[in-house]
Image 1 (cartoon, rainbow, N blue to C red):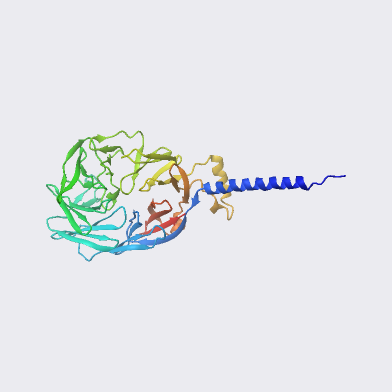
Image 2 (cartoon, rainbow, N blue to C red):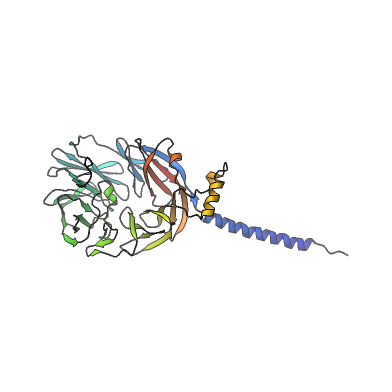
Length: 425
């Protein structure tokens, strides 16, 4: 009599189901571990090549206004319209936005002084004229070739990390300065001045500094009974880059917690420069707490004030990037590493209709989002022609959102015009 095969069959079927279940779980976690793809969700035309990242959104500049757009949708959160005024010949307005993205400041020269205006979430909060402040232009680079003049205005304004606004005018014998909180002027005083050189203020307002190519004047700031003071200390043999002009000096070389970056990328404080250990500073995060540094194929996010750090491998064609202001994410620009055989295979496969878009291009730059402690979370293939057809893009740059889920990219065309794009994953 032959035995019944049903029981062994049930065992085999159960084993098959178990194997498929295990493979399914492995496949699920493998899929989740793969970097996500960014998708374009919004675009806007801009009148100037301006892109400043904040916690609440990213700032762009349109024809007659500054606009803060939401990281989630790209929609307008608030706008500040350019006030009606006439600028003296050869001068410019100077503006600044804070780390949070709610406070905006604008200082403009007039024929009889300067006017400082402040807004919060697009609503005006403060206006005051400083009749003793004088606007003037100076040549940033006297050694530039004939016919090329890099000019800087003498008026400055900066929104600090805590929402206060500090404004000053670069004029002898010391820069007159004022500090505003909300709708009130809370302090007046002076900052260090050196003829022909720009004075900067750190993003947290801890110190001001000016460098002259030989030494740096370092001046801790203090406010007591409505008086702003800046006691000067000279640091010999220490220089930071001083050719940046507003609003781009928001990325200047002064950091939070009393520190800064020398021209070579070494960190300095009141005692002088520190060894860099081979790491080259690439960018400073909004607020000045973290740096994105590179050393060959590796990048790291580093907080000089605490020593906190983490790093990741970006590849041999590592071109630096930007970290988020809390130091959790880094957006890196690189070309992926491929062995020559793999590169040739990918090039051949990419010619197959419908296949090329799904494959990485071995010679195309990518923006990759890394999450601490070094996991690659999302990838964006740089494709300027597809993003802005018919335009010859001359320059572009980007910033990641604070939560790492979005990238804002600003494109500038050689033929004129600019566009801002928002991607999310």
